[in-house]
Image (tube, rainbow over all chains, first blue to last red):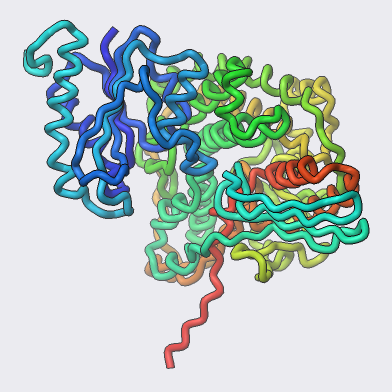
Length: 159
Length: 439
């Protein structure tokens, strides 16, 4: 089964566009993985993958680091911070969506969350330059993760 | 999340204050005071800042409210799009029929499924099952939660296909859609919808077994009623107490008051005061418009043709979800792509009115447009604004009838009494009371 790369975010909310923009970049070069964009509702996230699949999620985060900084979490091994913090009653956070998968025993084989520190989620603003500069770095990291999962050490996008 | 609760109650004196209501959308609080066995004060306090949508619609082009008003709500944007489109098309003298009309009902089916299922599973069921959130239910009731997620995804997929994305659809325009999907695209949804139907019946039967607190009032149920359909987009505004009007007459019969404890206007009928909109109202006024098998299921799970206990709204939402699934399957079966995805709607000076049935109840829009298509005035009356006085009346009645409850139970049940209405506070706070002094 092909790995799955999910970009989370809203293109109209400043740096929250990071996830969809990474997927745009991947789709231009990547055929070895399925890709999808989740713009708002994360409640059905756990229904998007299979137990024997490798999954990578890309999302913009706010942790207090510098805009553009990249973090990586093995979400099968550890929980994401901010669990239990509802975005609103109409939506659940990425951390809760993943925990739902854990509770329902619907986790994928591997689940890597790549977070990029955002500067602003204000509407109608462009992506911060430091955040935009992270996009090729994230794409490279996804390439490395997919290559490692495939037992390769090379460039899976251009093989 | 409830950040703080301050409660102090005995059997005849209580002061229950919940400063931040959980599992409702938006920012609100509840205050109930009982002295010497009498309820002396009940307030659903809405303090979310007003959003002034009606104000910034003024001067915009008549094609824009379909997209602008969709941003009022993340869970019922289709309702705002439909009320805006119908009202403006009426002002311009255009009626949309045929397959485009059917597709509008289909889009509404998707929204009802998304919204109702979210409320049933994640916001309301925790009250009955004793959990603080829908996520907390998952550990003990995984099948239930998987059912909820699958049903919700079915609604999301429907709205995404027809609306362009699952939240805040971008494919809706005056006169119809920018693009209409092919039969093949819709056929891909048939199997998930059929599977969702079985899950939904299980869900209805499961929720009907909950222990429902006693509460009944002689509500005035206000909803649309259509000659042949369970209502989404069209029909007269009716009630079980004699109201029977066209949307153009709404402002003669309903007024909105500004009260000190709410940034959302309170609605009342001129003739009889507070009234009830939403699933219980639609169900009571349109039970005979439901297919026979859904009527039979309602009877089987213990509901009559009129249900006045608002705690049982969770079961009625389930029945409406089942109706939306069946209606979606019917529309998909009958679908042939229209020759054009929309009918032209040229600008024309005039006033247009429309009411459609948002998941939470009647949603009224009025627009006044000039000959160039510029919006002169706009009015939007969302369901939660209409239900506020009814919610407060329910709280007063419930507390009066249940003074024997300990304070923890009383507070929980009071919060649940509010959640019975699935209130969307964010939707309700966009009134316009703006005076501009240009001297």
